[in-house]
Length: 77
Image 1 (cartoon, rainbow, N blue to C red):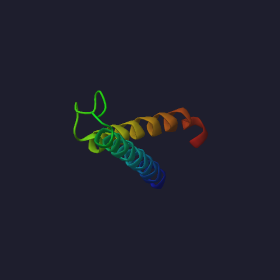
Image 2 (spheres, rainbow, N blue to C red):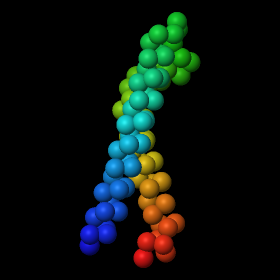
Image 3 (cartoon, rainbow, N blue to C red):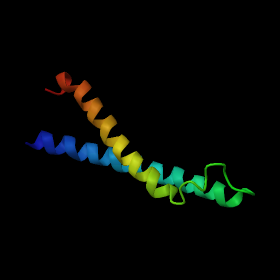
Image 4 (tube, helix red, strand yellow):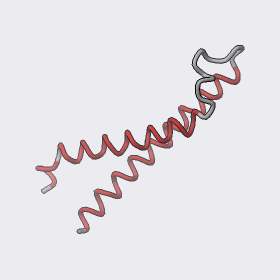
């Protein structure tokens, strides 16, 4: 059971790191949209880029971490 907890904890940590990076990328897009004259072409489509990219980053982190765990399953056991 300890192995499962460790794997789940690692997946959550990876997902949180990806979410933080997504939020930083979203903040950068917001900054560019506010600073550039006229904004970005698709910048006004979403006005909440950091949360949108943070959620996408979290879900992507879960998928990638799970896929890597499944790919290396024979090595783990």
